[in-house]
Image (cartoon, rainbow, N blue to C red; front, side, top):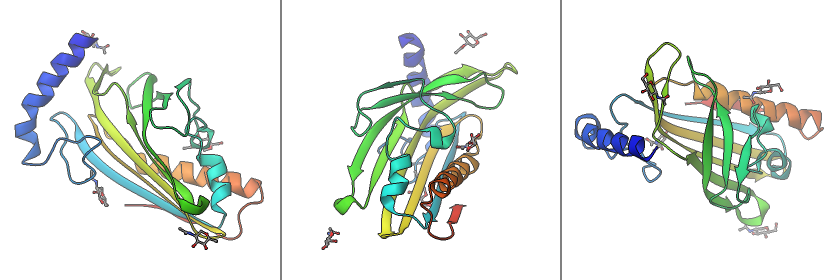
Length: 206
Ligand SMILES: *[C@@H]1O[C@H](CO)[C@@H](O)[C@H](O)[C@H]1NC(C)=O
Ligand SMILES: *[C@@H]1O[C@H](CO)[C@@H](O)[C@H](O)[C@H]1NC(C)=O
Ligand SMILES: *[C@@H]1O[C@H](CO)[C@@H](O)[C@H](O)[C@H]1NC(C)=O
Ligand SMILES: *[C@@H]1O[C@H](CO)[C@@H](O)[C@H](O)[C@H]1NC(C)=O
């Protein structure tokens, strides 16, 4: 395992000057423009929605880092505390032409906004770069992905949610569809609890 990781590092390091054109290699510390190593493609996707609901009701569904049923999958393993930086959750990932694989995501930032007005989190894949073989025989790579989420009150019954991901994958993934579907799911859950006081705005992606 260590050897694989090491040779990957060499490969990535050599690839950098050719692929980045002066941009830093993507990592957790590059929220601005960055470049992916060769063989992977940069994506940056932001999805937002505004709920006619109280921030505490949206947060009751989405706030616990270990409780992810709202996006259609629950961790097979967790470690640490769900509101504390360093927490890990392992989810089964799926990509085109790939058997489901375990992907561990680490919480790298967790901030409660003042006055119980919401929260911000950041998380990313642990054990990246991750190499895998596709069922069609081709090699695949996840160099990394970095997610940011903020849910904050804009009024007592209006809550704004922004969800960004930037990533370096060898195979394109439709993050917009995933995030929008998850946000729509949260809206359905709120509806079923009688916690929606109007019409959902969004989700929209750019
Ligand atoms: C992603 O796009 C947003 C705006 O659309 C920008 O603020 C952010 O810096 C971009 N992130 C990266 C890593 O390029
Ligand atoms: C949304 O909910 C449906 C039904 O509960 C579930 O099958 C689907 O995986 C969920 N999708 C996401 C992205 O959460
Ligand atoms: C917190 O809420 C109180 C009472 O609603 C308000 O007076 C105060 O300005 C708020 N503080 C912040 C930082 O929003
Ligand atoms: C992928 O396949 C190659 C060659 O068949 C093999 O050497 C390698 O260990 C496989 N990698 C993984 C992650 O399964």
